[in-house]
Image (tube, rainbow, N blue to C red; front, side):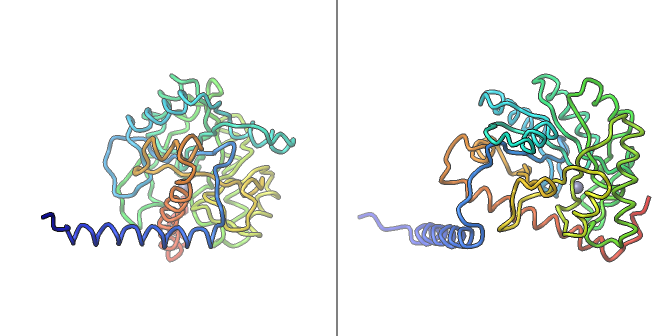
Length: 301
Ligand SMILES: [Zn+2]
């Protein structure tokens, strides 16, 4: 006679219950979700070095994801070209946009060769006060030291227009926590630095930690930016608002299946779980912002 494996059965039932609770929570808070026709993906580091934080992909993992996008046949657009098209009312587009936050050197070493091989455009958001330096702004949680791109590496990547650059502020501080003067300086100085060093004025800014509010958005527009990109949108937000464009972040735990679901290529019934996963990880990154607030002057370059 077969006796049931009670611990395994209990675990199975428990997991099913947990999934049901999470599903109900997600639906109640975010409603029915589906991928945007053009999915803006966010990457950070592309490296083979192990790191506790989740904001990285191995070089092989990144290559697999780009290969998956290539095989899908989805076109890859420059961020600004896509947003300009949206602004002109072209809403029928379908495809992918690639963005990299923080401008790490590993993008030059691990991602750029792949982008060149596939001819895929991307936007890299630079922290202009840390070019060529290590990520001291990210130290409170001590997840390791990582070098940012130098200006000459950025210049080389921008040579053939495959990679363009946006601003991620001067010092990667939570813009909502700054005084009016500091906020204006972060927006203006980073824009001026990119224009001067790379010869092209950035049209978009990526909010550090995805944090923005009405005051920050107004200051962004005032400083001459046309677009602001964030992480996941809040309930009730217009995910395509030009100054609060939502993106989908890819972390170390996200493989090609997660990518395919997020791009709407398979299992639409599982999209909610990917959306929830993305939101939960984004919440963790806010912890760094909270630590930074305690030491507001430490990261001034
Ligand atoms: Zn960042």
